[in-house]
Length: 538
Image 1 (cartoon, one colour):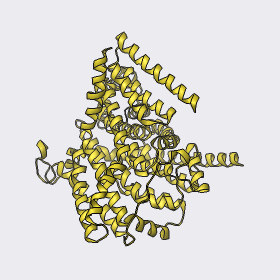
Image 2: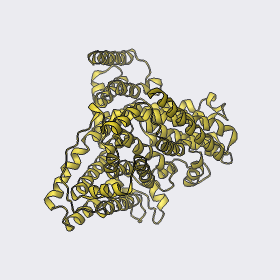
Image 3: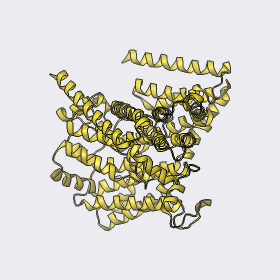
Image 4: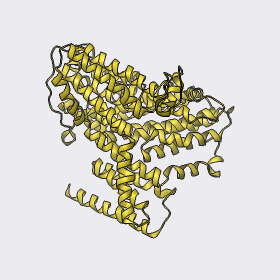
């Protein structure tokens, strides 16, 4: 442990010295390969040290130094003003949404709704396989927004998975794997709306192009195949296997030092399942209402927004989740609080006590989200990482690989989303580029578009600095680095098979054939891994 600490310190010092040397030497760092170094440093340190806060902060410092031109005062200003302060102001709405969700979870717990659902589930869900598949099914059903998905599925299913000895690492993986991937193939979601807003000029409506690309979104679709096959075959491998074995054999859901401490809370024994279901319905309904209201669905010009009266698709495309989600969830919180007080499951004083409880639960994800967003600001806004990738994609070399382009686009999108931690930013950069590569009558347009979307989701799914990954850790109350390290082998397996499918799709242009090939490869690989693990244990 001591040697590891010394090695980490040496690596950090070496990285910072390198950053200072590059900055002083006057090497061009804007819109070059150097722009990708800060997130790579942060991700590498997080995986080595298993500590996310310092790793992200060091990545921010490296980016700030690169962008400073050797001026120490500018570097400090980059960290504070352009990094952390800009991150807080840009994501303040999501912070509020997280605190409101935390408060609602605390309220429902105190009212006994979660405990009642746990008692119901114990009589209806009999096995570990059933608990995992139920978690997967709920994740698929909540397709409106990935943030909402992560925290809701975690809160609802945690008592069920705990009762059936499913590790928190496995719960976090299922949550993460059904958050962005399901939003990416749901025509009515905040993600579909965002994609549609980037597809102007292709000759098709944004939603039409999105829908036509769904069958070729191999990463999202094959992720679902992977989860079901992994659960049914009981073929866990990699770091996840240790956590699952500890959960089954020792009842240890966290595995030693990776435990996230949870205070035991008092709850009302009179709570019923409806006291969980009704608050969730309220939250879903008013979150959707908030999103479309901010998008102008009701004909209201919100803060200079577009009037999209009666057009739900246009309203979703025009909305701002950082405003709409807090708007809707705040109304839902007030109604849920009133309902539980009227049911005499909580008192007014107890309801008010849930507000700081909700905030306390979300301190860790808010801190990580702030640092991750600051790191994105360094890479994209100050160093122009997105411009560098755009230039690569428009190069003559990329254009000459017509049949291989879907696979190339998928890899580029994966890498960009992994390094920057953002799906939306990735397909915002790449969609206009892909649209220019193919004619509207060319089926490669849909394949290339789906490769862009699938790669963005894949990179986001794998990245430690992705907001969805952070939310999944928070939803499962799992150590963040543990979640990242345990899900990485699973996500990369599906990514590799998706890459093969895009190679084939570039020549075959048939989604069904490619999906069948991908499903066969996944099941075959899992059967092989299960056999290998059994031989190793023997």
